[in-house]
Picture 1: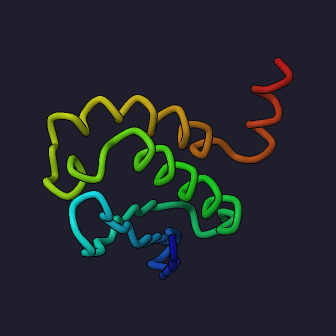
Picture 2: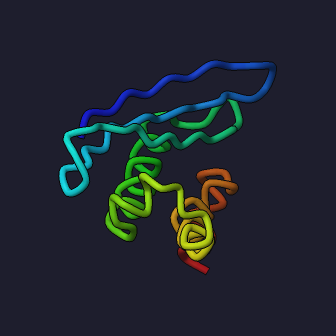
Length: 104
C-alpha cells in the first residue's frame, strides 16, 4: 500500500493526515483511499505519530473486508472505536507521563 502523510499547523496544534491506497482486488480493479487524521500538539513527534496512524489503518483494513470498506458499512465500523482508543490512547500523554504510566 502506498501512503502519503500531510501536516499543517494552526496555532498550537498540528493536523496530520495519512492517506493510503486500498486495492479492492476481490471486488474489481478499482482502488480506493482510506484517510486517518489526528489533531495533536504542535510539539508532537510526527514520525512516532505516523507509525501509530499506520498501525491504526493496518488494523482497520485487517479487521474489515474490502466490501465493508467499499460500501462504507458504518454499523460494522462502530465496533472498531475501542481498538482506535487502545491504539491511540496514550498519545494524550506527554512522553514523560507515558513512561511514568508504564513503570507505575
